[in-house]
Length: 579
Ligand SMILES: Cc1ncc(C[n+]2csc(CCOP(=O)(O)OP(=O)(O)O)c2C)c(N)n1
Ligand SMILES: [Mg+2]
Image (cartoon, rainbow, N blue to C red):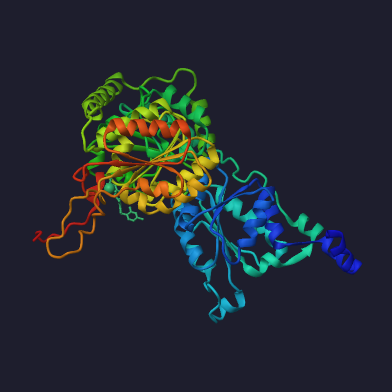
């Protein structure tokens, strides 16, 4: 058959075909050359065939139900692997759906590349109403770290190289790569095409801190009476886990992990001050931030949370502009976390003095008191369940399965799980991040399973789950070892609000007694309705043992939960009295 077809063509045309390549293949070759072998996306014009060809070439192409979830998957793939996660979308609406995740990646400093097909430039620029017309490059630019468009097949190699470098070098972030429909079909000489590809060398070069800055930081740390180290997700991203552990242990300083830095050192480590957070923030005199920013999550480094005692801040960050962003940084250390921590360790020498024992003793005492106070609540077997009873179960399961990755979103479901579930290994907790957004759940779960091959446990508020819930089909389709536990309290924060003036339900409540487990059964996954901590425990253990896609509807008391979880104080209040 194939021979006959070739014979019908003039010899010169066959010759030409053999020597030509096209945009489709060059993009695929460029991605593979740079080790980008997983794509998260949603097919459609003009990228459907590209997805098929990428899959045929050995790239893993994961097809989602909505681009935002594919984008979140790509963003967390970037965090977990230090390589840009790739999201592929169609033009205009598909692009916009992915853009939220790209902005999220940039805000969270995750390397990601959003590749979107786009419509005819000539028509878009004259606003003549093309299919899915939109000036995507212009729209993406303010929302990401860098944005590029490739118009010629010969520039694909350079275009992707620029995108990779922009995503992972310095402070990582999101990059937009605009690929107009016409580009895919463009042909060029195959040998020239191959030559035009770029294998990016040392995409995220080490940034060595100035020796003076290291000495200054160590001097300030040594002078402290009540030092504290705060580990941020930048420290987790760096993948220099041993060096960080060594540094923290050698310093003897209590450490506080931000939520995605939990597990860099186990939450049960004797220096961990997680359970004494308010004490250490208030009473410390020197605070060393490692890959953590003084944004809203740390009350901007000032105000009531930080108490009256004067503070000195040491900050380690790859981004020089981060320094003094909220308060004065007396010892800025600018460089990549690995180089900075190595230099600090070296500079400490062999006989670094332990911090004053009255400080470390006071922190340990506070921590033990708080842990002891919490313990009985975590063992309650109430029906309907409350957060503590349900989380007590999950806490034990994670302790027994420290290798599993925990995905967590919601309000109360997030805030309480963050405090209660101890994490033992680095990068095992991924959550709402810098923006505190809902919707990351299923995208994160899928990417975590794909990128790490480890089992995933998702602890989701019922509202939070709704933002990405349709991706349970994706989880079932790819047969991923994901166990979703929905903390179903019938609503946002609580399920008890009432509307006293009309027939519509209150804005924060959902259908009472909803059975999310049935959603999973619809796609061939395992669904369980769990009404007690014992049932929950059995169901989660079974799911983790089997590795089968599972959704457990954990029935919580609708009255459990408080407004906005732990951040109710951020709700604006009128000076007028409530009527
Ligand atoms: C994208 C986005 N939209 C809306 C919000 C506002 N919001 C914060 S928490 C939350 C849901 C909280 O309810 P649930 O997930 O059920 O957790 P619960 O407090 O009930 O445990 C919402 C909608 C948000 N953070 N992000
Ligand atoms: Mg809820």
